[in-house]
Structures are given as structure tokens and as C-alpha cells.
Length: 214
Ligand code: GRF
Image (tube, rainbow, N blue to C red; front, side, top):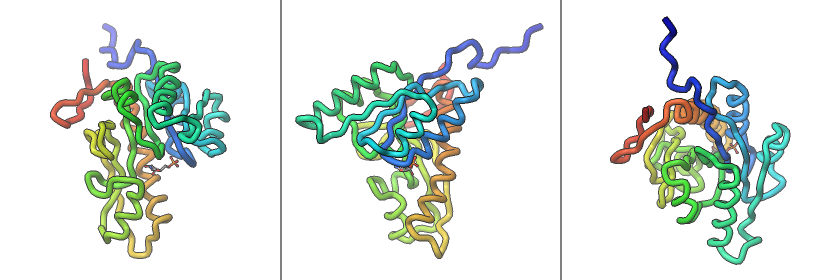
């Protein structure tokens, strides 16, 4: 009698487009994970809002195609958003992952990737949204912070939460040490959850993200 097939068996790997603005250590974690076919997802392209960053170099070293759209090269934000959307579309992603991408996507992008655009944020949302999650948590004096993976909606870091991981703030932390410790936990959470989203599917209902759609 054959074994019961795993849900992912026989399925093609999910296609990931990853958006970056900087170092790309979260991207690297996804690239490393996707080297194993059992992961169930592959990074098919990496996009950025600036050139010359380590995130793009990581993609190039991995042989993954890249695209760059700088806001300042477009007449307005709507044109930039259209270009970003078009470049993503060329790679037919199942999921777009913002991994340290420091731009807010516009309405057309969000419409095209509604429910399929996730972002990782270095704080426990809804605390400390915005550009400086680690610094804001440190300044506030919280004892526990962390990282949040969420499905992007039209707000700033307000979308339905996929998962969170807690990280203790130490007395001698500065922003760099705290953010680096958050990023260690964040990378594992990102890889684990993107893999589950790819292998199991997921649903979003009443702000609740649940794995499994079959
Ligand atoms: C991550 O902590 C992410 O949450 C934040 O910026 C950092 C990006 O790190 N928005 P990296 O570029 O993946 O190393």
C-alpha cells in the first residue's frame, strides 16, 4: 500500500520574487533553503529599489535574475510602482517577499499581489511599525521585542500576521546589537513560514492567517 502523499508531493515549487534594499541576509536564508527541493519554493528573481547593494550581489552569485527600479528614475511614484509591478509579473511569482525592502508598494502592486505579498518587520507588530522597528523598541525600553511576518495591506505594517518570534532586549544592547539578534531569529522565522506557505498553502480570514488550503 503506498504511503499517503504529502500535500506538497507532485506540486511544482512555489515561485518567489524577493524584494531587497540592503544587505540581503534574509534573502540569503531563502536562497539557501530553496537549494533543497523539499523546501517547496525557489527564488526566481530579486528586485531592488537601488543598485550596488549586497542583496543584489547575493542574487547574482546564486545565478538568480535581478531587476532594479529607483524611484528617482521615474516621473512619479505611480510610474515607479507600475514598473515594479511589471518586473515582478515577468517572473510569475506565487509569492512576493519583501525582505528588507524599504519602499511602500502602491495600490496597483497591492491589487496584483493581494494576499500574496509578505513583509518581514523587525519588531512585534502592532508595536513599533515603520522604518525603525528595532531602534524604536530600544528607545521605548521594552524587554521583549522580535520580528513579525505579515501579509501586506494598504497600511504601514498593518496586514494580517503570519507569524512572530520574540527576542529579549539585553541591558547593554545598542541598536546594532539588538537588530542583529532580531535578524538571526527573523531569518529562521521567514524561512520556516515561507516554506509552509509554499508547501501547505494558506488562507486569510478575519485577519487570521492559517496554513493549509487544500
Ligand atoms: C530586516 O531586519 C528587516 O526586517 C528590516 O531590515 C532588515 C533587512 O535585513 N526591514 P537584510 O537586508 O535581510 O539583511
